Amino acid sequence: MVEWPDDIDEVIGGDLTAAVAYCTPAGGAVVTAVAPIGLRDREAGTVGFTTSLGFGKKLERIQQNPHVALAYHDRRHGFSNSSEYVLVQGKATAVLEPDRDFVENEIGPRAERFMGKPKRGKIFWDRWLQQYYADRVPVTVKVERIIAWPDEHAAGEPRVFGSPLPTDPPPPQAEPRGGVGPRLDTARLARRIAALPNQQLAWVGADGFPDVRPIKMEDGNEARLLLAASRLLPPGGRRAGLLAHHYNAQLIGLEARGCTGWMVVGDDGRSARYHPHTEFGFRAPSNKTVLLLVNGLLAKRGLRKARRQAASASA
Image (cartoon, rainbow, N blue to C red):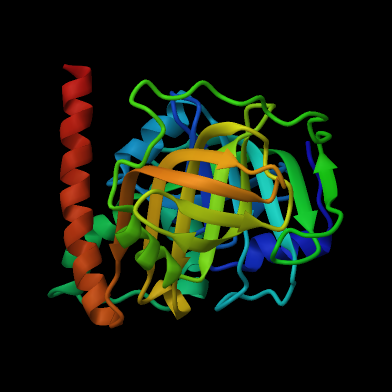
C-alpha cells in the first residue's frame, strides 16, 4: 500500500479537475479530463474519479487494461494552493452499477463541494437530471506510485512514493501500418489547441503505466505540431495522446480538445514533432442552467446507448 504526505493529499483532495490517461490495445495512450471530486482513501491507498456510462469506450479500455495515470496539474477553482504537479499511477476498477447509497451519500456531497448545489424540482429538474446523476460511474485506482514535482511544469527533482521509477525509458515503438503522418487538418487543430491553456501529453512508460507530462505547443502547420516539455521525453517514435483544455469554476464553460497520434522526440529530448491521427473534443455552455439542460439530454442518450451495448454483448 502506498502512503503519501499531507501536502500531496491536499492536491489530490482539492483539484477541481485532473487529466486521466489510459492505455490503448495498440500500445498508445489516451488522455482526457475528469472530475476527481476529492475521491481518495489514504488508509486503503486509493484515489478515484467519476465518469459517465455514456463514455463507454473509456470504460471499456480501462476494463481491458487497468493501468492508468491521473495528473493533478492545475489549481484553479479548487481548494489547494500548492504549486506541485502530482502524477498518480495505479490500476483502476470501475463500478458500472454503483450502490445508490454510495452515489447519494459519498459522490453527491463531494460533487456538491466542487460543483455547487444540484438543481432540484419535482416537476422538471428531478426528472430531467435523473439519468445525469444516476449514470455517474466511480472509478477507484489502487495506487502503485506517486510522483510529485515542485512546480506545474514538472521541472526540478521529483519526490517518489511507492514503486521506484523505471531505470530506463520505454523503447521506441514500431510505426503504424497506416504510416506516421497526420490524418487530420493539423493546422486547424493547432489553432484550437493554442487557444486552450492546459496542455498535457501522455504515452505508455516502460513499466506499462501511462506517463503524463505538461507540454506547450510552440508551433503547428499542415504537417505537424511542435511540442516542448520541461523534462526529457522518451527517445524515438511512439504512439501518444494529447489533451488541451480550459474550464471555469464548477466546470462551467469547459472546453477540451484531445487527439491520439505519433510522437517523434528530437535530439534535445525536450522537443517533439506530433502527427495527430484521431481527434475528440467538446465545449460546454458557459451558463449553468443551459449546461444542466445539455447534461441531462446527453446523459439520457448515453445511458440508452450503454444499455443497448450491454444488451448486445449479453445476447
